[in-house]
Amino acid sequence: MDPDPSLVQAWQRLKALYPSDGWFSAVHLEENKPRLWRMMGDLQKRVPPGADRKVVDVGCFNGFLCYLTSQLGYQAVGIDSLDIGKVPERTAVMAASNAAYHEANLNHLDPFRGLEPGQFDAAILGEVIEHIFNHPVGLLTSIGRLLRPGGYLLLTTPNPRTLLNGVRLVTGGNFMWGETEFATIPKVDEAGRFTCCESIHYREYSQPVLLDMLRRAGFEIEIAAFMGLGASPEQNRAKQFIKTLPACRWLQSHRLFGMTHHVVARRAPSPPTSTV
Image (cartoon, rainbow, N blue to C red; front, side, top):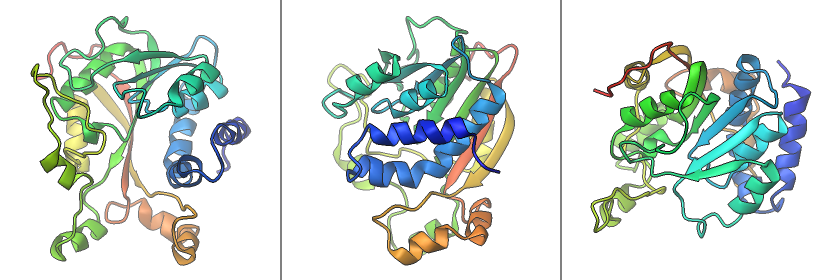
């Protein structure tokens, strides 16, 4: 099915924000295009755009998804703890999105203090939950409280149970991002606060565990699928070609070949008051 024309136009405007030959536009956006377009398509189907429709991007990085959702007609809000020195473009991107930004430590037991609960129609948690060290179910529960009853969570995270990871394991290779950084970077500061280590995947989850976490946090699962990543100019031509084949896309929709979980979950009418 062809994407909505508004998404195609919004994507083109997003790409134009960044140097065409830079890593973010040429590599990151191109490799992540399949999951981002699918998330935006799910958002448009379930929450029709409108000036009163609010979407929060939890772990918004440099604000690119705030820009994309704002271009689709939503009111966007971004939340992150990354220091502006690591993402200097964030201020300009958020301004171009007319989006509010809130700083929050996602490892905190109450990360969204000061934010009114039940104010968002949808939340995006894209490639974030694997970076959470302290209490992943607690973060999901806190996101649920931000959503209106029936609001949606769009979540993606790496799938560790792939054939490629099995090969890496038996051949002695690394199969999770940030293993060296985990051993060398402090995770707690002198005040006992958990720090943000965006270079580390603390845990990657199988589908049964991920869905159980979401249910414990008060969500009902609508979609639980697997998908692959797109091609970028950094990859060799053979790999780029293989990724365009329908057979490859079909294989990537199955666990052994799908590098990414793709989940759409809906906030239950009465989210839990406890994260136990």
